[in-house]
Image 1: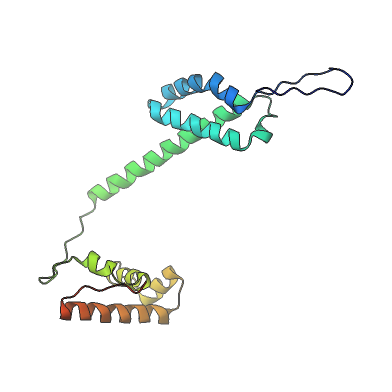
Image 2 (image 1 turned 90 degrees about the vertical axis):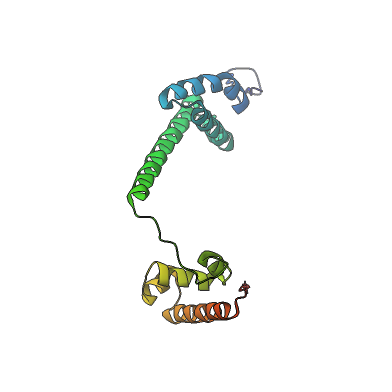
Length: 180
């Protein structure tokens, strides 16, 4: 649907503004083909163009006044491709770093049926996080307090309560049930 603007007396100037739908139909395929050549992946290109058109639809009142609305949509799609490329580079670098790091050692459970993560997973959230940061990540009480944005006394309480609950589990052989 195209909109035309007229004066009350006569037609002096007619400005036809295309809708997002008509822009989509006219330019989607061409934009996807062009960006596919740029990124060598038709799915990523299609996603970028679709996201650009969604953003254009959301901000249509502003975009319809652009001299070249398709150029604005194209720019958003290209920026999305760049973001995806940067994200993939960061992901690849992180995977390479993880590949060279030694793997985590398995934890002996002294005949326990469940593994440690399952047992800790049953503790209340704050206790579980405090214990993981303190014992696994080897942070100090002050560092755990800073990470959780709570007082050091609260961290000491979480650690005490968590140890007590785990002691009772080990002693009884039962599973802990969370109070959350």
